[in-house]
Length: 330
Ligand SMILES: NC(=O)c1ccc[n+]([C@@H]2O[C@H](COP(=O)([O-])OP(=O)(O)OC[C@H]3O[C@@H](n4cnc5c(N)ncnc54)[C@H](O)[C@@H]3O)[C@@H](O)[C@H]2O)c1
Ligand SMILES: O=c1ccn([C@@H]2O[C@H](COP(=O)(O)OP(=O)(O)O[C@H]3O[C@H](CO)[C@@H](O)[C@H](O)[C@H]3O)[C@@H](O)[C@H]2O)c(=O)[nH]1
Image (cartoon, rainbow, N blue to C red; front, side, top):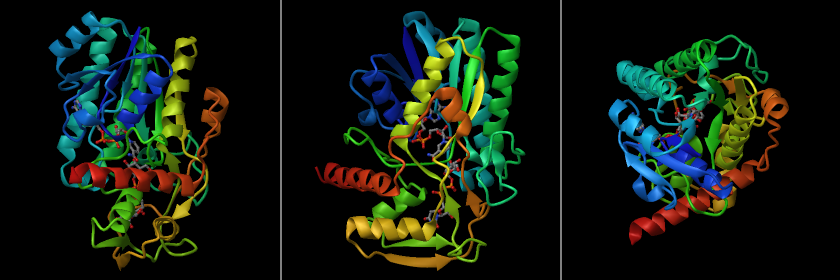
């Protein structure tokens, strides 16, 4: 019995592959290596280089390996890019997910775990942790493309012998505490990655997108979750589906928020580098406050985060950034 991980050569997927291997699973990866890297993949995983919508390739994978579950990370992930180029996002995140789900149903793969996002909520109505039954108002094609996939999964699970878990991630950050993988994305836009790159001198300054929000220090507040806690939630989701439980949608976050300035201060303190920061105008589509209520994940998945600590998240991110620098020098 093997697990198919789509996008397994990417940031979160490469951590998932290690978590699965650590827990004794056989892992098959499907990745077209558009933003992921072959070298990011654990050597024990079997890589098929190709597209999630390539039906012939999927048929071959399902014939060759006894795939019992798919964990689907592959997709396009930059919110502002989705505003500029919505059709590419709908194609890669929605149309191609449809093709993957259809192939899974045809091959009789019974379980599916999907990377969804807090972006499905849009701007939460008030500055309080958001629950899964909050209104769904994505404010970007990225968020809409993910919500559409959630809806396809819901309807597929009603019609077929198929169960799924959609995990709505909040802000994923940090790197494998054992240093085996981390976020290696070229030209990354995520705050913690950008701040670490700046601290290590790979960027000249960090721009803060707006300091006039209705928050205590005027900058946006997010719920940063360590990538290893996130992959642990996936493992638990997989076990739960295999145990015959019904489909589920669950938030993944810690329920506590940090502002952009909190993150900048923490990266400066832990790196010992006082890097340049420039405050610029607001970035399109940023909500002031996005924090998870993750009580469903705790109750249904038995999920207990182990790294709910901004210092730990940033320390592992800095360690990985340091490793990447040395790797690039070689
Ligand atoms: N990083 C976050 O904070 C965050 C938050 C919420 C949700 N997510 C979701 O988590 C998932 C993984 O994100 P990530 O940060 O690891 O991104 P990433 O870009 O590092 O990884 C995506 C991987 O998918 C591959 N890929 C993309 N399109 C493909 C296709 N059509 N066929 C085959 N492979 C393809 C890429 O080569 C890459 O390896 C995405 O679905 C993203 O929307 C991420
Ligand atoms: O150089 C930067 C980068 C970010 N920010 C701010 O930092 C906060 C966090 O931004 P970012 O790290 O880009 O994450 P989000 O825009 O919150 O989106 C992330 O988190 C979402 C879930 O909440 C996911 O769906 C997205 O894929 C993922 O990019 C926001 O207020 C940004 O305006 C800056 O001020 N400067």
